Image 1 (cartoon, chains in turn blue, orange):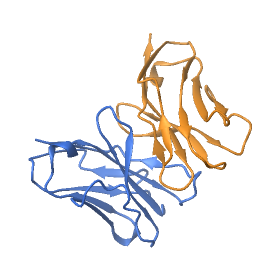
Image 2 (cartoon, rainbow over the protein chains, first blue to last red):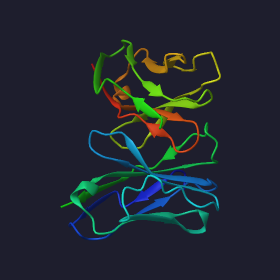
Image 3 (cartoon, each protein chain N blue to C red):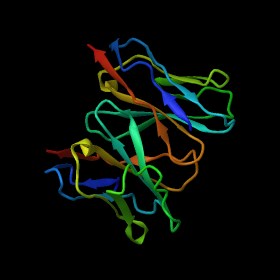
Image 4 (tube, each protein chain N blue to C red):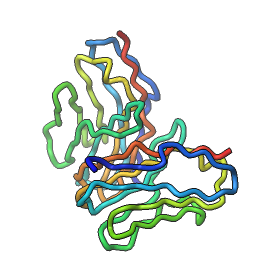
Length: 115
Length: 112
């Protein structure tokens, strides 16, 4: 596609359930990022993939959060045993490379609501 | 750790007027990059302007310009001739090595 695609756009789940959020980056982009945006907060870094390198998981808030990137393209963020504090917008971004000046292209995010 | 502070949670501006959004950051590095991103209601973050720390000249992009004060670690965004479409959340961001670090944002309202 022309841009970064995220699905679903909105997700409502019950506390304790597992959820999967999907991100399709721009074709050819080697770097992929996941951020979390809670109400009234900035963007909180979660995880970063660059090519075939081991991902930078330093931002994952707990072991309930995990992510994978298959074939260097599509990425899935999984949240197990969801809690109400997990409610937020989850944004995915990709860039051509990993240079600091690279422009990030963002998707429209997944609004997750945990009841 | 690097931090980015936006001290204005909300700002408003009259259409066609000029507004300045503030941003300060904390780093011990001398070479890095700074960005302003815009987030409209669609939630998709859009790059507004980018500044390389080693460049003395302030970046400009049409109606958008920055005032980069490296010694003061300040990076403000000036929007000239404000338009209704400028209404959005604006985020200041810093990067030296990945990942990009964001401030908490400033919500800009444009009054017709």
